[in-house]
Length: 377
Image (cartoon, rainbow, N blue to C red; front, side):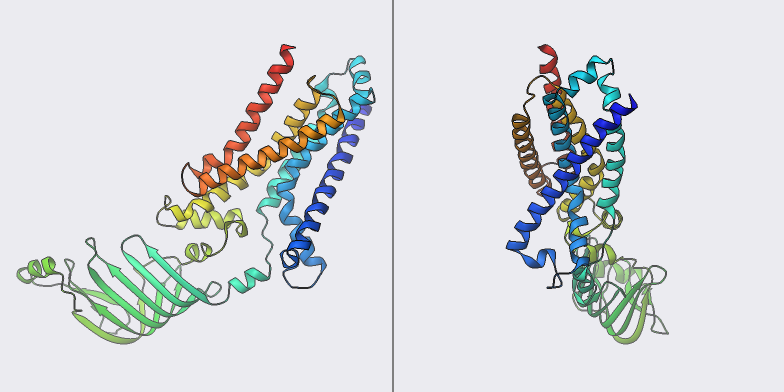
């Protein structure tokens, strides 16, 4: 039985590697003709860019190769009569295919790992350089940075607008520079502070002019001021340094939102979704979809492998030619369905998490349907 298991596994491995190199090479040639910089962003052919591109595409190709290799392995074993010989010896299908299933588990784990590794490239290095940034924190605060550096978490030409529950102005800060740290919050340099009257009083600079304090108003004057919410500032003063520890608006999730979802790994996506104020915000839909897709990578390999084995062992078709046609049509159908559900998820027509899992759920249903048809005969 061990010899049979190893023989079947060797056959499957040959088809898996062959289909992987074939698909990888075909995609490489097409992309190289259409957009050279997509493979070699540095503008010159080099091994590092090629390796980065190769690793980036592997998680999407491995499930297809698992399906194709399973189909063709069983198709050619049947064509050569080897599968019938294996069954005549009393070895069950599960025992003969045990090595493939065992290998599929390791490949699935590897596929999940590949989909979550982070490989920096030149685009990311350029992304860490200064660029404009806008942060909207609910209806309470809006930040504007003319230039913001994602590495140092510092920005220049900063404007901060703070609003109350009814949309009234509470305070504004304009500064030449602002830096954020998790321990101390925001630190502004060389700017101007404007405080507006409100229900909570008047925000002003402290005596050392390095922090913000609230100046309470008399109760008899507070009511009319609260009703009118004066448009002109009640406090207006410049400062050299201002520490605002009470405002803990982390800029990192907003910086990551400037990148495309497919450029982020799972850790970065979790940071964006976990730290962003409103998880249901429509602009987070592509990032929620990407996170769900990454979680589906490992199961996708096993689903493709088991689907291929189920179809290969069925009595519906044993011809390698027909099996090849089924594999091509199945792959095209799967990615067409996936493209459809990706669009629905990104537009929040359905939940992104459901959109990411629906193509695989439909694949499982098709696999069950094929098994049901096969056993009815």
